[in-house]
Image 1 (spheres, rainbow, N blue to C red):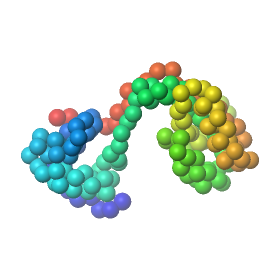
Image 2 (image 1 turned 90 degrees about the vertical axis):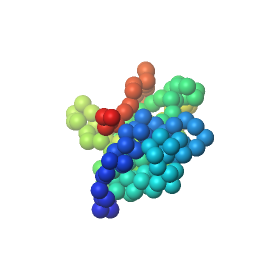
Image 3 (image 1 turned 30 degrees about the vertical axis):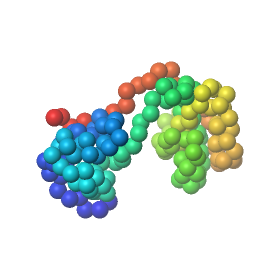
Image 4 (image 1 turned 45 degrees about the vertical axis):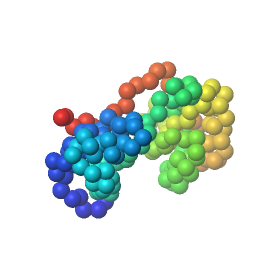
Length: 163
């Protein structure tokens, strides 16, 4: 990670203003700039620096999968050979239908899974098709797998800075 530049009061105000999401307007950086007394270029420059230094991790959309028609949401879990998990995890994470993919420690003997990959579809058959594609990709490096289907939406938030 690059050396962090000082995190000043304007950075804090920008983080507070964006931590709940960007304004849903045609020009969100301009709206933020007006609200914070900056230029749109300054907002973009600061956000870029905060990303580059690791002060913030990402700027991205967080869709409501149910609202856009993806009602079968499955966290697939895989028992993958540890010697190949980095290579295979990167390949699974690169699939266009995997929204997030990560390695987690096993909790033996109850939980042998060390690779998690979230997939979405309009129905469970679609999720099963995607699971088959992942299984084919993992091949004999995968000893077992399962899928955990979502039953409701949980509010996901990261760290919040108080106003």
